[in-house]
Length: 239
Ligand SMILES: C[S@@+](CC[C@H](N)C(=O)[O-])C[C@H]1O[C@@H](n2cnc3c(N)ncnc32)[C@H](O)[C@@H]1O
Image 1 (tube, protein in one colour):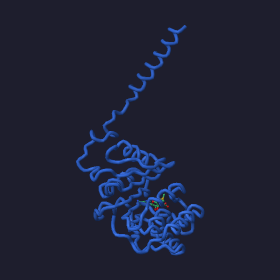
Image 2: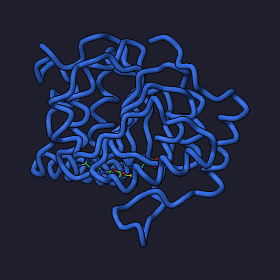
Image 3: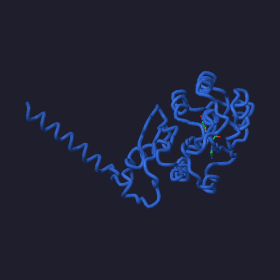
Image 4: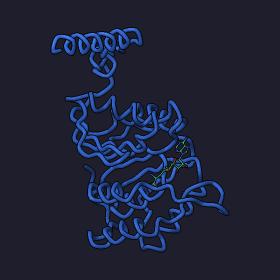
């Protein structure tokens, strides 16, 4: 981890910020200043993420909002990527009102799909994937950040209730030895990275999620018929 920043808040002040976000749920999201919304992480996730951050961590998120406030309050050297400068301005205003410095936050006003492939591959301690959820965005976000996460670093996947997030979560759960599921809330999963290389040189047969046979509808039907026949036969035999 890099050297500690010098403008982090103390633990009590950070705790206060987390609780302020949980109770106020400020409207920081959206491009329309006349109709901002509050699409931030759920309160249990905010509390868990808040407790996982340390001053000086190198962090990156796709999307921005309450999470950005947490990274800033913890004194992380943070990058927040979202295509909406309006959101960045609202977050900066909210932080100023709460006495949180954004001196170590780089707001990148672009789509993560465009910007991540061009970024320097500096190491990261924590990555939050919570930007565009349409296919294939979360996978691209993961592809361009996974190798950058240090061993023992944290990957947070939000919105696993959406199919893209769910596939990424299910894939990572099966990547035992490379990733470990450390915490799970309703629709958010926290993974620890266990080894330096998680993509390069790993072909699909080495990935349990890909190597598992897809059950064809015919095979599923055959299995169902076999179960029914067995059940019927054992009932008949016991009569
Ligand atoms: C659900 S919100 C993020 C919530 C945030 N983590 C929080 O705690 O408040 C989704 C975010 O994704 C951003 N977004 C939309 N399209 C994007 C893209 N192509 N690349 C990166 N971010 C994107 C939106 O602007 C919005 O900030």
